[in-house]
Image 1: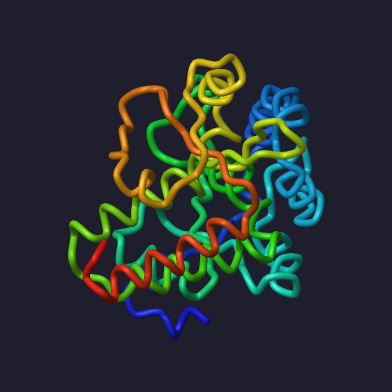
Image 2 (image 1 turned 45 degrees about the horizontal axis):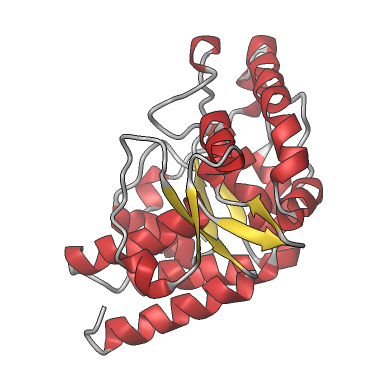
Length: 249
């Protein structure tokens, strides 16, 4: 698979799982235990199901090859270790290939609340359980496929808003309640508490409104969007692709 990648190949690494220390496993366990109460109460059922399907353990760092072995037969995705932050062309290429770029480093005990760069906790605990859900997995691959063909930075920025308000900070209605599935809400106590406690306006998902809402990374969100089902974002991505092809995005 790696040989088929043009832009991302140089970023692929091996996860040296045996090199993780007991203290790092303990940090992972603490991070999970801090998030567990909110996750059990507010994560959507698709996330909770995915957590079990991929075999995450609460007290040990994830083995990426073991997760991939569970994911591939289900949705075709792998959880692929990379050396760090990827440029956009490499990132989209990996999504198109159903390879989720995953960092292998873990934040220190001094940075339990927040780390400016995504680590293995954000990448795996936050993102990967959703990759076991077929519709979400197809949506994510299609997003990568469309973006990989685009050179226009303005168009990519607008499509990035769709990614941000779904994959990163998406919400979903479930039996009349607002539940969370976006990795940035799943992995962040502050963002999740903000949604739960009403500090964030929750709007019904609308592709037009999402594409018109700029991303802010310097503050807790004041507006997020809730879908009714994952079919909604799958269809929204196909509509976005039509607009790209017609130069109407």
